[in-house]
Image 1 (cartoon, rainbow, N blue to C red):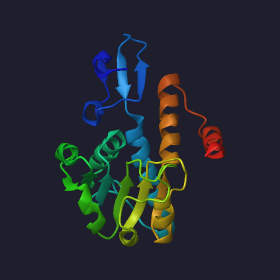
Image 2 (cartoon, helix red, strand yellow; image 1 turned 180 degrees about the horizontal axis):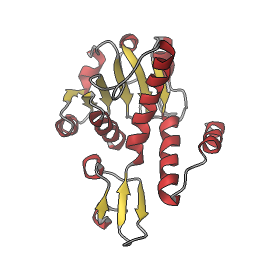
Image 3 (cartoon, rainbow, N blue to C red; image 1 turned 135 degrees about the vertical axis):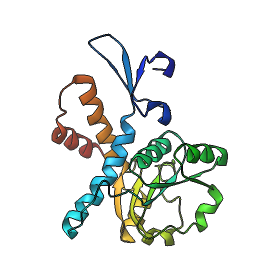
Image 4 (cartoon, helix red, strand yellow; image 1 turned 180 degrees about the vertical axis):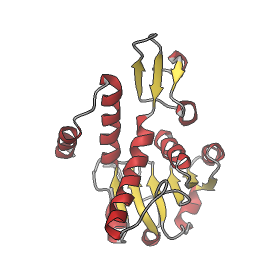
Length: 218
């Protein structure tokens, strides 16, 4: 469904530039475009931090990523969803992309910073930062690669990888070994599917059943 065909849009749709679902209102027949990947990825990150926080007795208000350095590698569709989601939670967004102009454009849109991709190898994140890989690096065709310097992984509190084949990428394995929380792209895939089910049916998705099916496949 192209953008021009939508008569009504979700609030963040025009900013994120991409929909992955359409829902026809019963009242007037208008279409609303939604971007479920945005909320799916950010809530997956937040919930992982909150779960550990509960164990450690931490309290988060309003979001565990508020005021945190949020490093996004890749300024394509997934990167835009992550960047805008992080912006809405009050994170400080830094964008890396092989197309520096695209990185600058996205950074300007989220009031963040853009860095040249070649600087990523020497980039030193703040302690407790969030890293989100939104590039194909780590997919089944390049499973031995990671997008950042391995020595910096110890400084990230959480590492998210939008890649979900394989489920546990080299980036996530290395980050976990370095002591970071990790969130797989499978979790984003599942949550956006749940979001679409809720939108399309108007009913609550059978989350436990859907999770079991997805985890069995991945």
